[in-house]
Length: 241
Ligand SMILES: *Cc1c(COP(=O)(O)O)cnc(C)c1O
Image 1 (cartoon, rainbow, N blue to C red):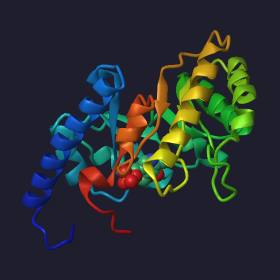
Image 2 (image 1 turned 120 degrees about the horizontal axis):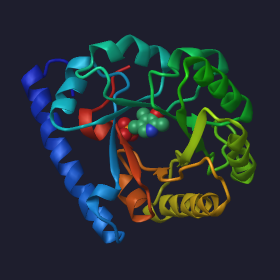
Image 3 (image 1 turned 90 degrees about the horizontal axis):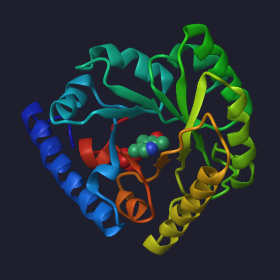
Image 4 (image 1 turned 180 degrees about the vertical axis):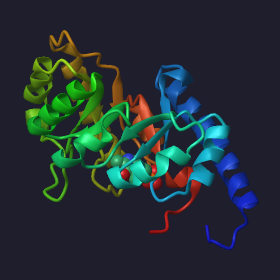
C-alpha cells in the first residue's frame, strides 16, 4: 500500500481482505472440528489511522488490538463507536497500567506477578475488573518478553489472590519459523499448556481464550486450537512506521 492510493481504494482493499480472511477462518475452524463462531477475529490497528479502522468497524469488526498504550490513548476517542472492545496486546510497563485500565477490557500481554498486582490495584481504584491473558514466551527467546512456559502455572495461581483481575487464558507470539510444521509445533505446545491451565482449580478464572495467530499464520494457529486471531497487515496492508 502506498499513500498515493485513494481512500476509496484502501477501503475496497480492506473489504476484500476482510471477506477473504473470514472465509479462511471459517474453513480452518471447521477443519479443526469447531464452528466458525468459536474463533474470534481481532483487527490489529497499530500505526493505522482511525478513518481506516472505522471502515473495518463498519464492516462488522468488533474487537481491536493495539500494542502501545500511548497510541491507543491518542486514538480511541476517534473510533466509531469509541467504546468498541479494545485489548492491549503489547508489552506493558507497570507505570502505564493506571492509564490503560478501564480503556481496554483485556490485557493480553501480562508477563509478571508484579504487573498483575498493579493491574489489581488500579482496577480496584476504578471499581472494575480487568480480564487478562498470560503471555507465554513459547520459543524461550531471550530477546522476547513473556513468561517462561515453566512459570505459567504459578502465575495463573497468583491471579486467585486478586479480586479485580480475571484470568481468561493465554497468548503467544512464537518465533519466526521457516516451515509450517515448525510453527504448528509451537502452537501445539501452547495448546497443551492452555489445556493444563484449564484443568487447574482456579475458582475465579474463566479460561476461554487461547490467543494465537497473526497475518502470516492464523490458519495453522486455528488448526491447533486458537480461539482468537490477531490480524493486522493482512487486513489493512503493510504498516508504515
Ligand atoms: C502487530 C501484532 C500483531 C499483528 O501482526 P500482523 O502480522 O500485521 O498481523 C499481532 N499480535 C501482536 C502482539 C502484534 O504486536
